[in-house]
Image (cartoon, rainbow over all chains, first blue to last red; front, side, top):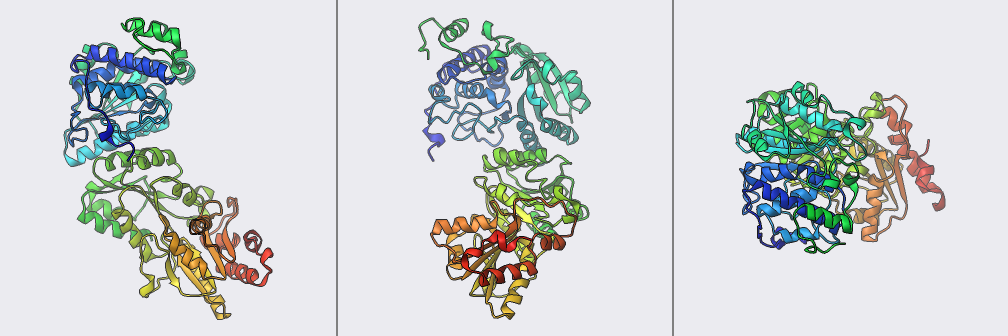
Length: 292
Length: 320
């Protein structure tokens, strides 16, 4: 197999994997670099969930980079697959593979596609990219775990725009009905979707109440506050017999001032000066990076 | 076929606790005993086929062998992207079971006519496609789906060809199964419409026209050499399916011929011609209406053999 996992270089993790803030910063830097090098889209969507990914992979998720298929691992599904560079960076930083592989993202012949693929990439559970799939798969995993009497948990990260998909609500009904309290939906609620703000496209409010009405236990917190997220994840399941939804209030493009709160950076790729400025805001020395 | 499937699956499930049967709220009266006796292996997901397929995928990737069950197009076309991206791309051990191939539920209308499913499902990488033609094949195909790792589509017809016996009629994965021996005409059929193929062959045989009938129960992966061997020896090759002509059995046979570079001397494809049925009718009625009945096959085959070669285009000989 051309994409065999064993071809991945061994991991050399440059950050303290327990320091979620350092990990988040590195995810952001990698995301901006990948968006520039591959001229790929969705950097704003990665930046909004970088903190959550960092917190999840810095002590919340029970995973083992040395044994990615460990039976009792927690499962994580990035259902908002357009933020693929974010999960690739998080996994590389966590030690699943060498961060140097990230430079191939979106390039000809790479295994790191713009939207998430699991083929040959240690740590990726599920390939995504078409919205509205991940929560059902996660529900199936959680159902199987319950059936097998296993304690592992399933986390599924959704985007807000993704909640336009009817299939999400099929899964929401299902998980509550079957009392899947080891299933956690994490919603990156950055309030902006592809073409316009969520509120102008297909309003979700009262969003938390919708999840509650469907029988989920809901927490709504600042998705850039690492302590708050750690506390919320530590308290899971928030209510026995209920699946949990953690709605993260986030800022699209968070961490790069000119990308924040903008629709533009859902699709735009950072060009030369933008790239340099973005990296500078993320603390990378000027001239330290090649631009394209 | 449906009862045979449930009975066979139940036997498998009793021996293997990994087996799960998930329905999209269909199977009234048919799944009751399975649900009662194997409650941990039965799940009614509700009227939500996208979720059904996603949940099945998640459970399969967590160690289960999952059969999804519903009628006609619901477990296939309604959730096609979940089948493609989730089940097939992850090579998940999910077996999609559609009750009611072709015009099985003819009187219920176009929503319940599964007449494009073979073409669509077989195009998916990694998908095994099984379409039994009689009750024996339904049992064998169910077991084959269970034993074959990865995605599988099992298309079950309401009708079924009558049972045939004999050493050459054993079910073998990937191999067309000979239901009736005959030399001059070779009919390859799929699904319950093989009952009409067998009836037509009997009539033609009485006229002195030796006519073999083969059930292509495994649409994919299909042994192309076995197809070529059937095609090579026949003066006329006929395909019969309750399915659209684009991408169905006729296409499968032609693709096998192309692979083997063995071409039929003559070929007639009996299938739906780029059309939906808006006419109400039983499976038998609709077969007759759309030129798939035994009578239609007899007429078409006779006309083709009597007509000059250039007049034997399948569309002309089967159109009503």
